[in-house]
Length: 144
Image (cartoon, rainbow, N blue to C red; front, top):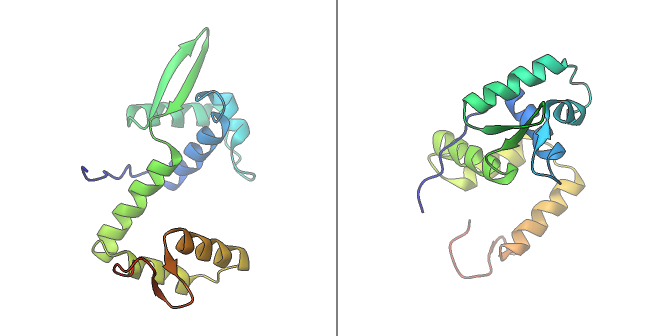
């Protein structure tokens, strides 16, 4: 499998992309107005700012733009999951030499996890076949 290339989004780009993914969930595309309406609470960007930023994401090839009548419609080129996977992989490789355990350790140790987060981690580990009670892998492979 070819290596995943990080997409390198800024914090503002991520905010905009999350809104695009949320607003285009049903149709696969959204207008700038729909993206503006889907922005996280507290994001006080003007319509023109959102339009300009979406056009810049088109130039960066993270988003495509098509016309339907007078309105421009935007579509993310990657799914949210693919974008997140690429960025986490780049972080893991750049900071932790490709090792996942130190990354997870850092995240768990540096932030106070809610009970909901801990339950979700246990569920994900169990889904991957990792016994959280014994602290090892139930599949007989290396600990992830």
